[in-house]
Image 1 (cartoon, rainbow, N blue to C red):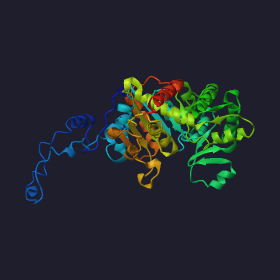
Image 2 (cartoon, one colour):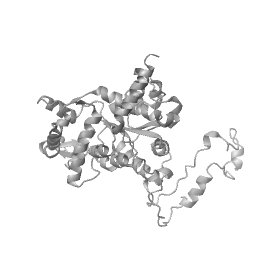
Image 3 (cartoon, rainbow, N blue to C red):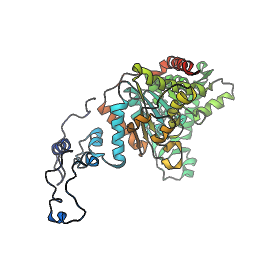
Length: 424
């Protein structure tokens, strides 16, 4: 486990009456499973005459958890300490469980981590603030994203401004001022959208794009240009695509036509551009990554999925196991870790809200690993910065796996296993 980011002692402050200080709280946690010497209520004569009351249940297995008596917040805490000490119930507790699962198990040296992105994450600044640091720390090994997130990431790479706005301003008025709105994020139609389209088309017209390829190769090639734009503008760490290019992190989009990148590819095709996306390449490469992760380290490797939102990226990440088992006939058990941040309900039948238990029935998740599955019903814009800060504070950086550079090797290994099992 890595060292905490804030080691200095906070200045002592006067505490509210009834709230334990850090030292007292630490002692209470150490003794959390020790029953109190005396319960004033059960010692009362009134308790003894209650007809349904019974004394002493200190060994009750459901009452062995940590005390809910939390330390008073002083303002000197870092995010990781705050999560560990005060996020004890409801979705606060689920977020604490998610942080600990991510750090203590999913970031094991033998584990491979896949990240999914749905919803407007990059326009909200979460790419540069959270995703790039996670990539650079070796905490994300491959990504499945909507095309929209990668398109909006290019605004940052090209140094085109997005601004904090407001959902209260009339949209007709915004349209008149050529402002595009993503809830409370504003961007200019000409200076950002059309400018991004122009640069992207210039990139996609290059000779290296005049062929059929998967989305991982396309994004890697675009990422090289994003990296160059970052360097020219002296804005290192602005772009997810640039960071993924530098780190060898492959990025896939399961529905490439459903974004402005796909729209620009289609528009250029009408001018004779020869770039085509082959979805079969993406399906098999993603399955090869997961199978390779499980077969690594003499078969003791693991694979975990960190899913921000749901939708097509979530399904594409999890369908790797049915692709391996159901379609290719290769024996496998399912994902080892399932960590989802979502606001989607499970009772509507949509994939976005589907639970880890439901995923077991499809072969997506190893049934023996269900205790290592967490669903946290929190806005990703709230949870992701906290999870990122927690991970960087509690875990040292991991060596980069550079999976993009190994895609051909992993694909060959998938092909060999398919050949061995196809006639069984």
